[in-house]
Amino acid sequence: MPDQELHPYRRIADDLRNAIVKGKLAPGEKLKSENELKDQYGTTRVTVRKALSLLKADGLLISEQGRGVFVRQQPRVRLQTTGANFRERRATGASNFTAEAAAQGLQARQQILSVERVPAPAEIAERLSLPTGTSVIIRRRAFFVDDEPMQLADGYYLEELFAGTRVEESRRIAGGVSALIEDPAGPVRQRIVRFVEDLEIRMPTPSEVGALRIPPGVPLARVLRSTQVEDGRVVEVLDSRVPCDRHLFQYVIDIP
Image (cartoon, rainbow, N blue to C red; front, side, top):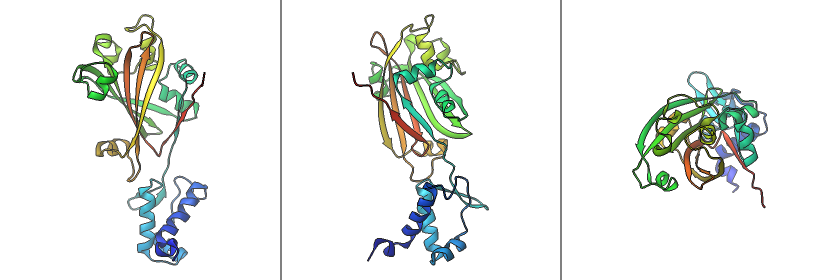
């Protein structure tokens, strides 16, 4: 017996999913009621409800109390990684994420959540060539596009370099910390020569679900970026967490 006959809710879910992907159901559009969908597909409300639950778990639909079920708005930011791209974005004086969003016609903003000194977690200490537990400076930030939370980013910095600098101030740094690193009058005074990014795909923690408003079933991408300067030191580790339904990653690798 065909699978769709065994599981009619999957047939309904696939039909609605295709309509969303092809734009027949637009972001923000309200779906028909369960009763209307029941009649349309010649099935029961229970079956329709299972299909809608499946699409909610996939992050395609969202329920609004007392209003109905809607196609979920999904602003996407393309996160592009190239050396030329980094230099181009730096020239704008905006953070890399804000400049990336603006280049794609999106309005982005960032919020500084906290700045403090903490013991370095093992994976951060390893990248900064420090003993685990060594005190480091952390800047916790959140990024938004059209008030949709898009990214949590924690930057870790060596105290010996950045203590008492703008890194420890709870306000934005023009051009981001990268500008401070390369500032001839700054604490490092060296050019950034390499980023090393470790990408992990996993399910979000409860706190990440709350902070980023991640629907059930949507995975999270965690990117650990180590920033290396001319003398070989890693002077920043950026721990970014982004919902996979809101970002596209593009890596351009030039082969010498």
